[in-house]
Length: 213
Image (cartoon, rainbow, N blue to C red; front, side):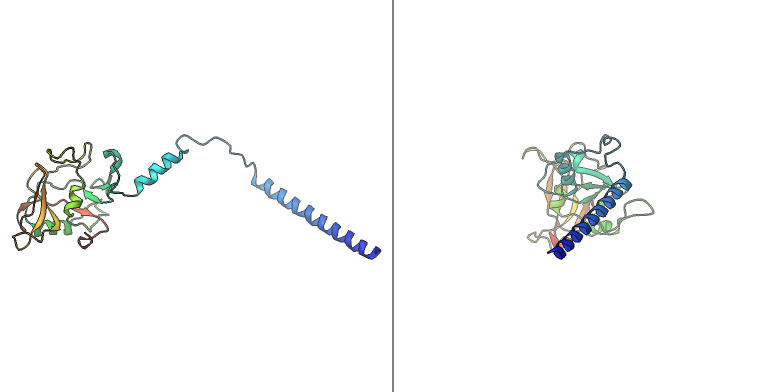
């Protein structure tokens, strides 16, 4: 009995010593960490409410179901040469006309294919003609009687009212051998003319291809 008591006492003593050493080590770690209380309150602008964070996340994710104001919707990018549309995720030429009238659809397609936009030392290629749905997604309608228009406060420049802007949307039911939809901003007219005739190209950039539409 006495022997068992001695073993029990030794075990208790060993456990007490281990706990004491562990407590000392933890206290030393806290001492090295210093004061855990912040030295000053957060600066203005660093604190965000959950609603503000939600809005910021929403703006970073394109969604065709959203209705954004022009200031929230459009962001000038690529050295002020292009505009990101946050509603669709598409990147557009900021100045698509520049006085250039093209003689046919193939010239419009080639213009976008060869286009380079951005700072001189860091330009971006990969532009294409938009589909008719993409081109008209830039517009805002008020009623069926008036032609749709670009939203007030948009950052684009030199948008020609005529002639038509070519698109990549093929019209298979036209009487022409090959026909693509085009759109005229002056009166909101859609045309499914052939591949010849004066027109313009408003080039777009995205991960999608014509085959995806």
